[in-house]
Image 1 (cartoon, rainbow, N blue to C red):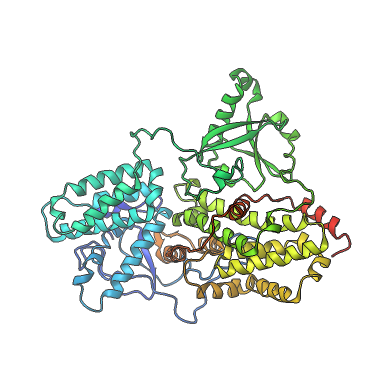
Image 2: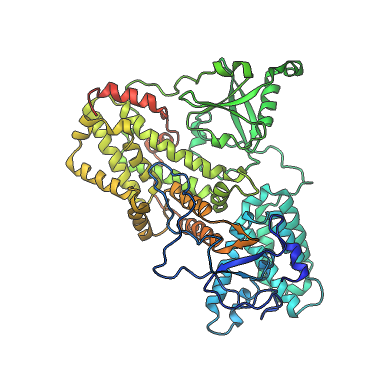
Length: 607
């Protein structure tokens, strides 16, 4: 049994007797109490052991949803939460705040202990990355605050202060800008920060850590509820919003839920109003802004003519959004739009006319060099990839307590991946001449090759998937005119993107690459989804630490991919700026039925 005081540290969804669970083999662990470092439950703690060689991973309940070209199954899967041989480690989730204590004493540790210290450091990172799966961030920080002891300098009190400071530093370094959206968390951090700064006993012992803490707190710009927001906040442009050249040429910056954007909301007659809204605004807030713009009276609402918000795709598919839904802007499809109407006019809604002219003509891709297009694709996708906070991957799959608010940057990159896939088909199917179309097909394969050389696997994958679109692959005459060299090259690309054996070929190629690189992000999400569905986070009041470790390891691969800056030499000539603007504002047809119509017009008899 845990000491009585530790029972208060368990998350509401976990029984009071909950412990962390580690799979065997695991060293014997004494009952909870002061360990060798004066920390409750710290003695004998070690990182989860890897599965013995030759042991097969258990089959999950069901695989996660597969993105285009994705098969089932992750690169590796954790043991099930309910598997045999799981031994509880008697330490409450919040007592992990004490684990870094020996890490900071690594210099004084005897030889042979470094592996354990490294494992504990990894465990700390695992918990900071994944704690929201079983403990809300505010509660996590409150317990960390309570762990900070008062009393005289020295002894176990100083060791615990070291531990709390180490966890707080690691937490701030990991979360950074996300804390701007966490008002309650920001308040707790500021209280703990002031408590630490007033503690004169730490100045001589941990002067470097105190200075680092001060710098981090200033950097993250913590948001507190009683603080007034800064005036004249800049409005950020989203994809496909107004298509302003000056906006698309700017370096992309990360979006946060409090950022303000401009958005068009259309009426049934295709007129529209432009509103200014927070990115995380709810449907109810958006409708309130639209009602104000339209000067919609309360009398009309009382008569049952209240407005509803509808998302409409270019194919005509539509769905009513619920008033409580948030962050709808970044979840829209490529050519989807928001409509405001009454329930009586819902059935009469029709999509906007195609934004792209379905007429033959040369676009920028016919004039630009393959190297320039590929390099600008890589540069833009690197900007988008860098904007994604690593915790967005966890929130996107697990829907943590922060909701979908913090996944805007990840959702924008996924939209971009789909956009590039449809761009390939759009450009080919709008090219009427057979010879010209075969030349464009050759250029697109060359662009994919250069993207692979740039280690931009996102662009590479998207282009190959786009070329495998049924409306493109059926163009038999076009593919026959392709030179044999490029036919063989494309076959190699198809083998590389083959989902057989859980994308084995792609994973082997990716493992040989060194950062910086841009992975095929949908595959990372598929792996995380498989980990989520394949084992339980909580079982009989135990937190499945092996699962959390596997999730954190997957997130750390993203950290590794971005550990070095991307260096591409791009000229600033007018021609290059024109190519840059073209690549960043692709005009695509995402209606598959329309793509098939264009395909049959070009080659009616092809199969």
